[in-house]
Length: 54
Image (spheres, rainbow, N blue to C red):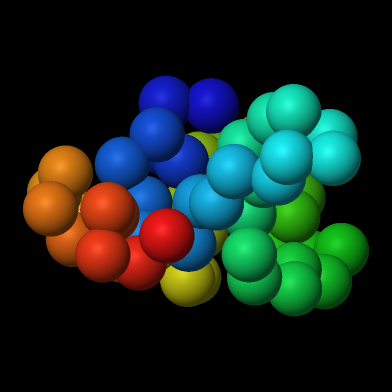
């Protein structure tokens, strides 16, 4: 999902070897994210912000 690529809540999980969302989404929020590309928790982060977060 392109929306998640620069989100502050995207973290790398070493066990899964994949990036995952750090927020708990309920079914309605997940549906909006997948179908409408709208996430209530989306916060844009630049490379420096994302590096500090991880």
